Image (cartoon, rainbow, N blue to C red; front, side, top):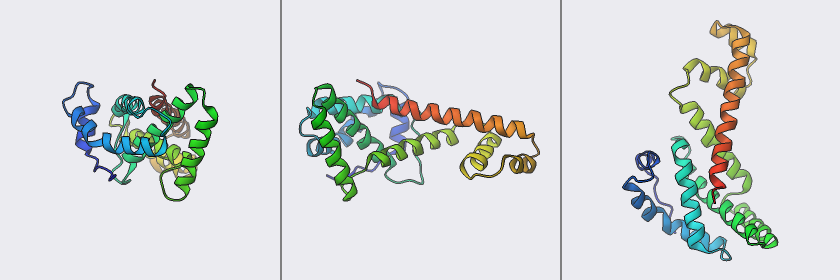
Length: 197
C-alpha cells in the first residue's frame, strides 16, 4: 500500500475544527494505508476500533502539529507510530500483555529490517514534531528562539550567547529554562494524544 502524499494545507484546515468538511477527504485518503498497516502488523486487534482510536488521537494532536518542511515522512511516521501505540494499548487492555509484547517485538524486528519505525524512531519523531512546533510558534520572540537554539541545541556557552546578543546572562538562563519547559509540555501533549481511548 503506497503512502499518500501529505497535504500541509489539508492538515492545517482540519486542525482548526472537528467538523471541517475536509476530514472526510483526510479519512478517505489515509484509511486504506492505516487499515493495511493495522491488519498486517496487528491482526489480533479489531482493525475498525484501532483505526477509530488512531483517528481520534490524530484529531486531538493536529492543532499542535506543525509539519516540518525539511523532514519528509514525518507525518506518516507520526500516524503509524500513533496506530502502533494504540494497538499495543488495546492488546494490553484485553489482558493479552504477552501477545502485545510479542507484537511489539516483531514490529521492532521488522523495523530493524526496514519494515517500519522503532520505538526510538517514534520518540525522535514526536520530539522533532514538538521542536518544530516550538520553533514555529509565532507568539515566541525571535530572540528567545535564537537563545534556545544556540544554548540548548547547539551547546554554546550561555555567557557567550549573552555577550553576543547584548543581554544579561540571567535572561539567557531564564529563556533556556522556559523554552525547555515549553518543549517538554509539547512532547507530553503529543504523547497524551496517543493515549486517547
